[in-house]
Length: 333
Image (cartoon, rainbow, N blue to C red):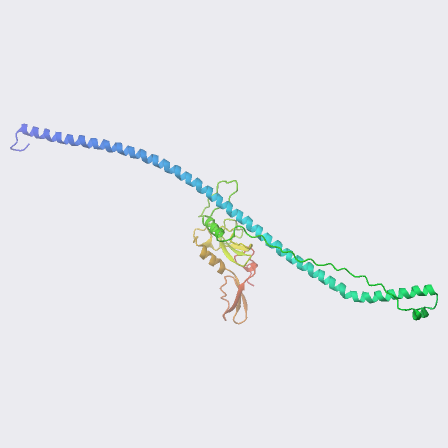
C-alpha cells in the first residue's frame, strides 16, 4: 500500500485491479477458444482440399499416361510406316535393276542372232539349190554337169523367219509414300523425344522410368533404343534422334552412330538442345582431306590438322573409318 493509503483502500484497489485482470483473462480465453474453433475448421477444410487435390493429381497423371501411350503408339505406327516405305523403295530399285539387266541381256542375244542370220541365209540358199540339182539329176539319169547346165534356176524356199520376242516395257513402280511425314510428324517426334518416352507394349502396360543419372559409356557400341543417335538418312540428310529411333528419316536409314556425350538424353551433362545436337552430328564426322600440296590424309575428328599446306577438298571417310561407327576399325594407316 501507499504511505498515505489506508489498508481498506488498498484492499479495495487490489480487488478492483483483480476484477479488471480477471475480466481481461476471461475475454482472452473466449477469443482463444473462438480462434481454436476457427483453426480446427480451417484445418478440416485444408485436409479435405488436400485430399481433393491428391485425387485430381491422380486423375491428371492417369490422363497424361493415357495420352503418352497414345503418342507412343503413333510414333510406333510411324516407325512401322517408314520401314514399309524403305522396303518399298528398295523393291522398286531392285525391280529397275533386274529389268535393266534382263533387257540388256535379251537385246544382246537378239543382236547376236541377227548378226548370224546373214550367214545362215547364204548356207540355206546353197543347200536348197544343191538339193534341187540332185533331185533333177536323180530323175533324169543324165550327167550331173549336163543337168546343172540345162537346168533352169531352182526355186529355193524362203528362209524361215525368226520371230523375235518383243521386250515388254518396264512397268512403273511407285514406292509407297509415308503417311506420317511432314511438319506434323516432326512436331510429334520432337514432343515424344523430348519427353524421353520409352517404347511400350501395345497392351498399355506401365512405362518404366528412365534413370537420368545412369552413366553412359560413349564407347559402348551396343546402342539400344534409349541411346541418342546421329542418323544418316537415305537421302543424305543427317539428323539427331533423342531416342535413337531415327523417325525423322523419311527416306530410310543408312547408318546410325551414338550421339556425343552432351547430346545423350540420359547423360547428366545433357544440353537438351536438338538444334545444336543436329549441328554437332553434321560436323562430328571423320573425313578424308585432300591437302593443298596434293596429299590425301585421314582425319578422325574431321579437323584435317595434318594438312600443312591448306585444304582443297574434304569428303566423308568410309563407314569403317568413322570414329563413331560401331564398325570402326581404329586404324589410321
